[in-house]
Image 1 (tube, helix red, strand yellow):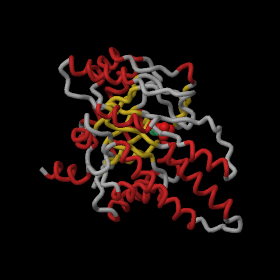
Image 2 (cartoon, protein in one colour):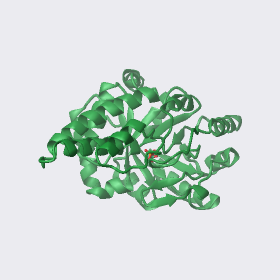
Image 3 (cartoon, protein in one colour):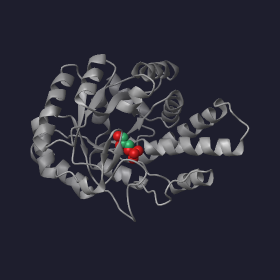
Image 4 (cartoon, helix red, strand yellow):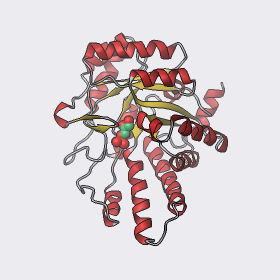
Length: 322
Ligand code: 13P
């Protein structure tokens, strides 16, 4: 059942985080729904601009509609990840999306406010909520690349002003993570001080809580990278991600949506590299596809445990029925 992102946020805020998973194809969709049912978790499906273009937006949206029939127990929201203004309007007008992200963080502060405000007006008129980004993450997300030197943490004072002026419903804050497999050098941690200050500023201004979103949240498991490389990959073994044990402490401070894409891609790459290494005569893509769906479901279920969303499905259903 597709629900609003706002409803999920309201129930999860300050307690646990909802996993927001990027999907592109049938196999990921099947694994995602199965993993969330197995772990009894609500979730957010994210479609990026790239995912909507990969086959055709109608194709991936139809796949989600089919999954909705196959898994009637599932409770989830559908979200546009990293939209520009035009794509946001397309999703808002389609009637299929629960929320959109307008990513204008590469513009000046004032331009970011203005662009976000326009999207908020169009979205709210249709009951859709808007995620906006302030501060800049390093790494590559779709067609926007930000080098390390230009990445900057969100300034908590600016965050409050941005929320007040733009009217956004949730804030993607830069708290030390970056997109992709190479996030940290050495032992680094999330900037909990930034999360805490943003939440405190919002409360001190008398605003209701504004859920924060953590982009670039994959953990890039060392063992996954090792297995990919043992099966012919050449990923840099220093690849490093977010410590999964930091998800829940961040959630308790107000990070309510945690975005995961890279880790799922690593599962796909590991399964397919190992399969074709071990079965060099094989050319049927369904056997590795089936293994991938099982492995992806297990991966999703384990992630939901770390996010604290596992086991929440029945409470969410009961709260939504009230
Ligand atoms: P990762 O690259 O860490 O998976 O982050 C994905 C993301 O933030 C999508 O918006």
